[in-house]
Image (cartoon, rainbow, N blue to C red):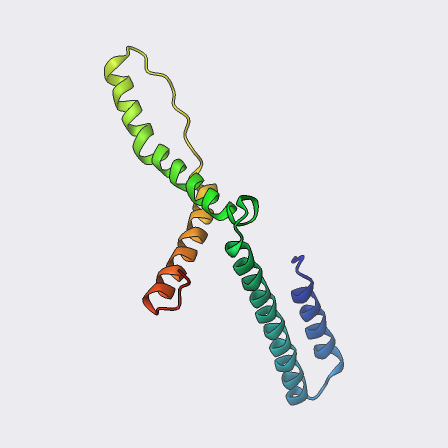
Length: 136
């Protein structure tokens, strides 16, 4: 079950067309038109979000434009701890102590989607720089 109103509406429209439109060609045409409208709406929503992202990124305010770098630094700190500091601290603790303490383990399943999103944005920035469309 989906909570997305557009997809739910398209599902209702599909059911309606399937029940009440007996001409298969007309039904296919109506469904294609509905899917085209859905895609157009989705594209408009994404373009709108891109515009919001541009405005946020251009802001000099730390509380508006600074959240992206903050998320990036949290990802870097988490990865540094999980894959560099924690193993080194465990190694030193095993050598230096009779009973080494338990070190916290971070749940990377929650960090990974954030990191992938951040790296995707970084890849887009590299693409912009390569094609000389990046703002300095």
